[in-house]
Image (cartoon, rainbow, N blue to C red; front, side, top):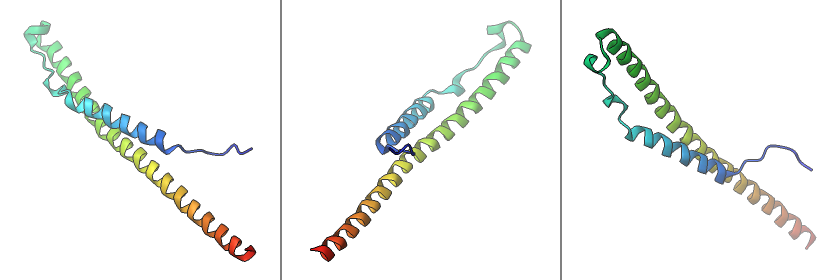
Length: 105
């Protein structure tokens, strides 16, 4: 029994697609539209604090979207690479079996 690493390309591809879906949904939400007037919160100091927080939050969301989309791309790319390696290995084994069959045939 082999307890080694197993990759499932379809699972990797689905995870990559889900990462793209989440980041696309975050892109569609305009986090930059969140504003706070000092009259809405009571005084300028609190409004500035909220503004600073939302600016930092927006930068974090933007970074998450960029990195998350890139991770999705990598997962999809990994799935394709695993499939290519599996196909190459299957072809190599097929060629060896053909040689052995010809030698014993």
